[in-house]
Amino acid sequence: MNHEPSTMNSIAKVAIIMGSKSDLHIMQDAADVLKELGVNYEITVVSAHRTPDRMFSYARAAADRGIKVIIAGAGGAAHLPGMVASLTHLPVIGVPVKSSNSIDGWDSILSILQMPNGIPVATVALNAAKNAGILAAQILSTADEYLVKNLIDFKEDLKKKVEESAKEMES
Image 1 (spheres, one colour):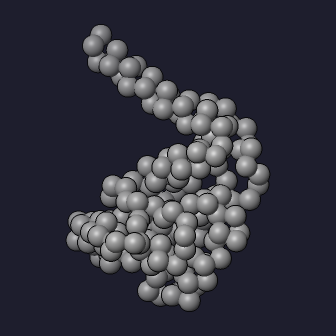
Image 2 (image 1 turned 90 degrees about the horizontal axis):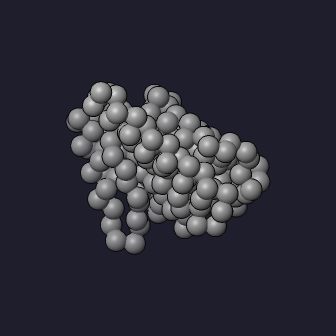
């Protein structure tokens, strides 16, 4: 895969936020795949419950900073993705995180998934920050031919890995 810088420029295009630093071990997967695909990103902690003023100002200023997509990971009550979506016109991708205070992750999944009409949040599977990164790149690729090529190469690499695994098992 081609790892040259994106044609978009050095401004972060994707924001990766999480409710707690303890979610970083999950959310790092989004950062890693965005880096692999050549997408600029920023990453930080923004808690809907412990720092609501920070969340409000972060979400409202994101577009002005050049952000095009927000990935928001949260566990437990998981209000961060929905609250951020209510404050911006940007697409928000929610990552439900199975946290230490979670009920097998279902509380997080349902909190992010069950948004009221008018405030959509794209929701990936439990702990699936990598898929959130890929989805963010796919959204950005609608206006970036370089990124289209990187995504095609990425998916071709996935296909090759499966074919190699099949050959190994069949021999």
